[in-house]
Length: 368
Ligand code: PLP
Ligand code: MN
Image (cartoon, rainbow, N blue to C red; front, side, top):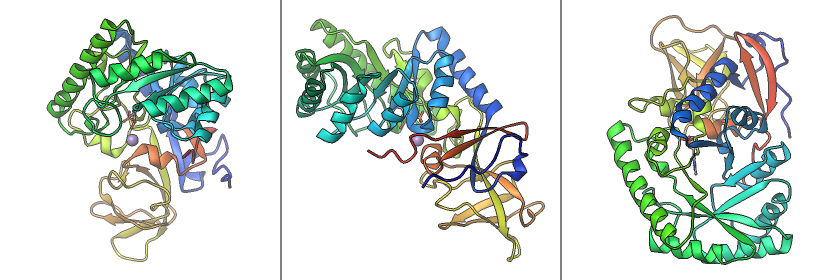
């Protein structure tokens, strides 16, 4: 069931019902502007990742600042974006199963849709779906550039798969997907540089081997919020896929030399119990905030520590300073932005203490 909006434009922030997903619009816009300004001198394009924001509204704000399109991980996310008017979408992931591929091919009639593959059988399945729908789908070869998750080995294996794609009448070879996920949260710049140095080297070698076989890469995509500056400076990558940069989270804030973006996303919570001395319980637990990458922080209240979560409750310890009052509203900084956003139907956009807009999280729950 769609949740009713927790606020109306014009309300003061304190009046917003909780738990609610707040978006500080000044900080969001500053982040979008900063990424555009950081990438402009490199000539590398942004294809922002919509797995984070799940919203055509935010996609359009990114594209208005020069993003060439959007990445998604799921067909359902691609549908929400294409139906919201986003014209150029890369599914930066594998899509397996005829039902999903039929949806993907249908979408290729209303938007430019590309997809990734790391297996010849999978290329055959995409080809069959494209043929049945009468469309031609660009397919990128995903290479394992160090994260050890999806992707064929860089080099000859990738070239063979690219040749298989290029030989199809119903597909087009779209380039390389080379994303090093586990590098994003390596804590020190030296660790991140080492990981991306490897990713760049194997990607460069594969691009060169493809070129020798007459195959050009329209897209060489990768790079997230933690490392995008390295991929953008490489001379090899053509597109950056950062997503979290728009919002940030407590886990990214723990990186040494963290990415240069502001926290724009908060879970607004209400203190619902002060029964125990030194404890304040808020109405935001596991169902309101993702804790897979650490517990939330309490914004602007360094003396309050979010110590544990249960389904509906968050237990804050008052370690210093004033205890919050019963009914007081607090901004929590989520440990991990993407799965937190997926728990809500609405962004409550606030500017200088007032609600300005409510944006639907259109791809919320798109797991397929
Ligand atoms: N690209 C791909 C393929 C991803 O899976 C992700 C996130 O996991 C990203 C880009 C974006 O990462 P971030 O949100 O950390 O910028
Ligand atoms: Mn994430």
